[in-house]
Figure 1 (tube, rainbow, N blue to C red):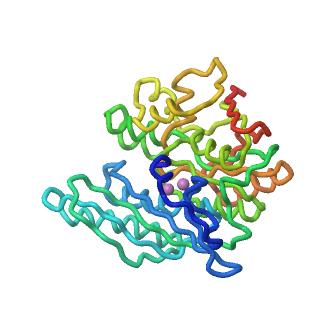
Figure 2: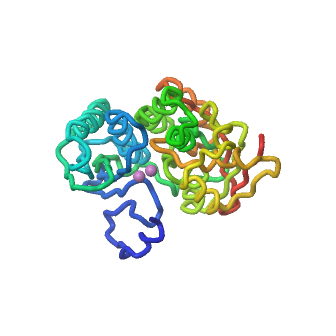
Length: 322
Ligand code: CO
Ligand code: CO
């Protein structure tokens, strides 16, 4: 996608606060001195068997990009690709119901959408939100010394792939599903309260891929402590047994990291595992770290872990054991 986005025309409108150039989570457009619109779109093919759960995860995932900008979702539109000849419409009804339940939780109105006939089912949402221009998060605001904090465990790509390959019963996916269903709303509220300015959410490029976006946009480096990474139970073992999504393998090939030698390949794969509806990755000045961790704890985010720090050296990405 990044390669394709290069071909978009360069933008000079002063009201465009965030465009495709920084690889941020959403576009941001100022409509008043104290108000900007946040716009994002996300859709994908089924990742779990249950239709309503798939719809709900897709909604949480789409909303997440608004939270990753420090925004508040206002309303959303459904995007549907559906094989009308082979799958019953009632099943699509389940998908939409699952999504509507999550947008309701987010206090985000569902105002419409569009569907097309498609041999492979696809579902997602366009989400519009708003944010105060002075308080929005971007990937370009990390500073040397900032601590890196993650709000959900890693491994959903590996676990959902294990399910597809019959290496894991669907019940064993419960922890991964509950994490994917958790809105990043609370994490964003905590980060706003802590004065965080730099954030992104962990999705298809994995932790290190999305961290690399921060490093490039902010002109800094980072050191990640592998032992501190919160991981879904069984994920390393399943990666070792080959339950690795194509996207995760591509991330591993693409990432330019200085890995501690003793880290095994399955361990490294967790740090680049393609996530769906992953947590927020926040960069916070060290003086505000304790406040942030306490605020995340109050919001009951799945985890709240300090996993490393921002370094002054541009684009250096070092992954150490501890
Ligand atoms: Co994102
Ligand atoms: Co996105």
